[in-house]
Length: 230
Image (cartoon, rainbow, N blue to C red; front, side, top):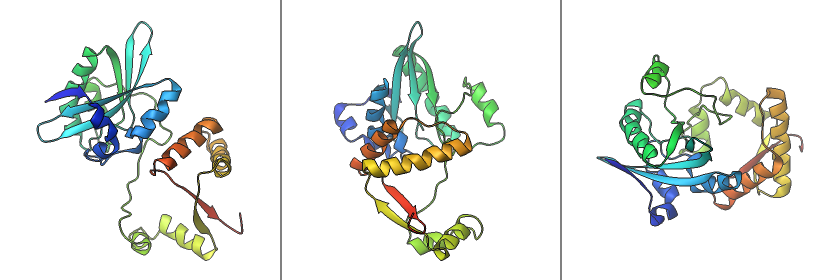
């Protein structure tokens, strides 16, 4: 087993490759997200872990820290699902990072917590820090069926009740183009929610660029819900 930097032809097909990871890929590991973060001063690195049975593809954001060296950030990755898989690859990543002048690596694998998980992380040399992503927990919903099949599979209380109530009240949902005007509408809603809920968001241009980049790549879409014409 070894770690290497991805070849140019692999980077060209990066989104297809990360879909092969055990977690099925994550939008924060996409090529578009990596390119987008270049404008925030990050550099991009693409790693390939050649394991015994498969390859693991990891997108890394890199910054230099004076006197310390390089910092690597792996947003929503590496793309493993089980803690046993994580322990298998951590020594490989640590060694490769050290060889490339990296003093710290921040990772965010989407692994379900369990009793003793934090202690096990500490035993492997990890230090828990404040989450970077505003939504650091993920809900996975199977949307492979029809709309009615998806709705019927939901618990009676919660989302299912809210959806049926919205239908009765005349709420409609429409796919909209990711224009500057629609980005402004969505941003204003997001800003209002952020104020009410007490979390921070970036400025309008940051979010507009983010939404439009993903829409252009056909991996992002805006939907608006309307009630009584608003």
